Amino acid sequence: MDAGSCNGCEVEVGQAFGPVYDAERYGVRLVASPRHADALLVTGPVTRNMADALRKTYEAAPRPCRVVALGDCARDCGVFAGGYGVVGAVRDVVPVDVEVPGCPPTPTAIVAALRGLSGR
Figure 1 (cartoon, helix red, strand yellow):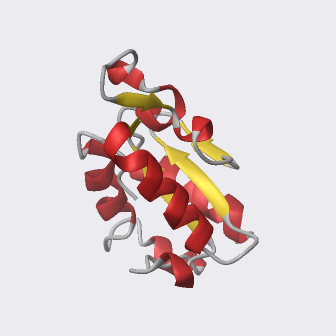
Figure 2 (spheres, rainbow, N blue to C red; figure 1 turned 90 degrees about the horizontal axis):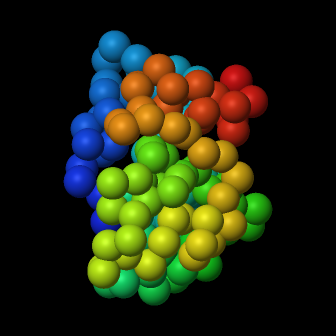
Figure 3 (cartoon, rainbow, N blue to C red; figure 1 turned 180 degrees about the vertical axis):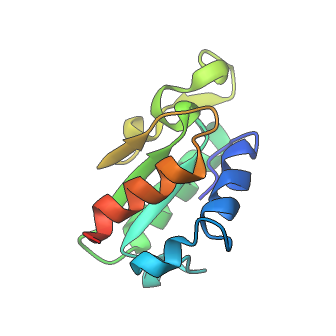
């Protein structure tokens, strides 16, 4: 879920699931609905417009649901810290299980974090 990012992290997520890094070979898949997800991958600082959407998405996911804060903005608001439209980091809105540093994080780091969640 993009909670207000610049889309840099989304580009790297696309690469992580592309043919070179192929996160799916470790049993990790991107799904369209939180109701089918075991984990939420959240990018960007949480903006005022996205805070409720993030909470509702988290509540819609089956339990136990893991949350990955992907990138510096998701971890601590990054360059958007203190912005008038920023509520805070992902952990300020929903509980976070894994944080992946980077601006943006590399596909290798993303795959490693997801492998840690999947146990593969």
